[in-house]
View 1 (cartoon, rainbow, N blue to C red):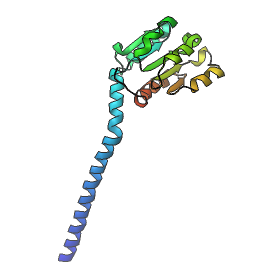
View 2: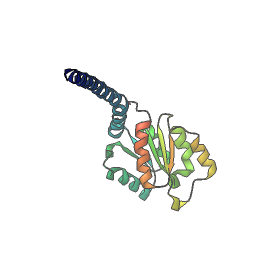
View 3: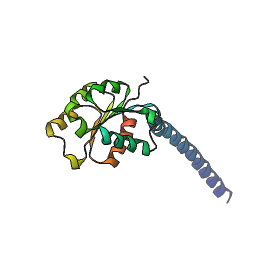
View 4: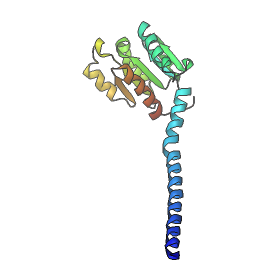
Length: 169
């Protein structure tokens, strides 16, 4: 009977060692995998500037969408309503473009965008689709997304904050 308890004790020690190793491994994986993503998202939401390219009601609607989410600070949203103001976007790391308001000068916006910055084009379906040639030009740019739905738009913005580079300016 004594031998049985000794075997149970050894098994208990082995289980405890495996539990400690597994717990340590889980903590290491959390610090290597989840923590960097959370830090990038936190920096993105707190510090990164968003340039919103749109006119009139569309401008205020997109800004309201961003602010109503309670994820973005108003001071980090830069409003650009005409082609001549594109230079203001230099400080922004994410460009949000309302397609139907800015399609005539989208090439200028693309030229202003740095490779590490994100470009999200919002083109509601009820206003018509983006021509194939211009879709191909957008596809040639890194970190670019096109969306037709407001809910998807917010998701693409948050994803872009995580996946694109954050450089202190």
